[in-house]
Image (cartoon, rainbow, N blue to C red; front, side):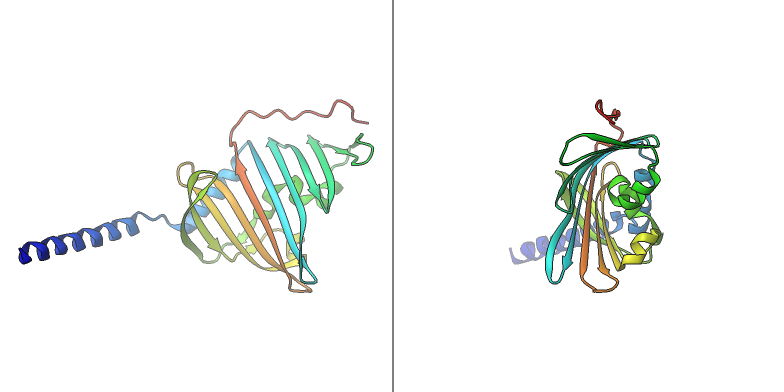
Length: 222
C-alpha cells in the first residue's frame, strides 16, 4: 500500500512539473504582445473609450479628467468632466464643436489644431500611448478586464509625446492585452511631475472595436 501511495505521489509530482513547464512555454513574448496590441489599436477604425486622469498636488489627490468617448475614423465625440467642469466636444473632420457648460450652446471652431494641442489626451487618447523605445517588457500575469481574460504587461519606456515629456518623467506603463482579440483592453500610465515629483496616473479603457459608429455635427452648432 505504501508503495502505491508513493508511486501515485511521484506521478502527481511529475504531472505538476510537466503542467508547469507547459504553462510556462505557453506564455507569450510580452514585448511582441504589447507591440501587437498597440498596432491593433492604432489600426482600429472605430472604438469607444474612457479616460481618467488623477494627479497629486501638494499631497492631495485630485481628479483632473473623467470622460467617455467614441471614435470613428478621424471623428471623435467626448463628454464628461475636465478640471471640475462639464465638457462635451465633437470633432468632425477639421471642425471642432464645443458645448458651453453654462449656456449649453454649441460653439464651432474651424481651426481644430490649437484645441487639439490643449485637449490632446482627451481628443486623441492614442497620443498618450505613443512610445519611442519600450525597453524591457515584463509579463505580470493574467487579469480580468471587463469580464474577459487579459495579459498584463509592464514597461518603463521613453515616450514619443513631447508635451508629456515636458511635464512628466519616470513613465511606467501597464498594458492589458485581451487574450482572445489581442487588442489593448486597458492601459495605465504612471509618471512623476518634472518639478514637484508628485505622481500622476492616467487610466484608459477601450472596447467596441470595429463597431459601426456615426459621429455627426450637433444640430444647434453656432
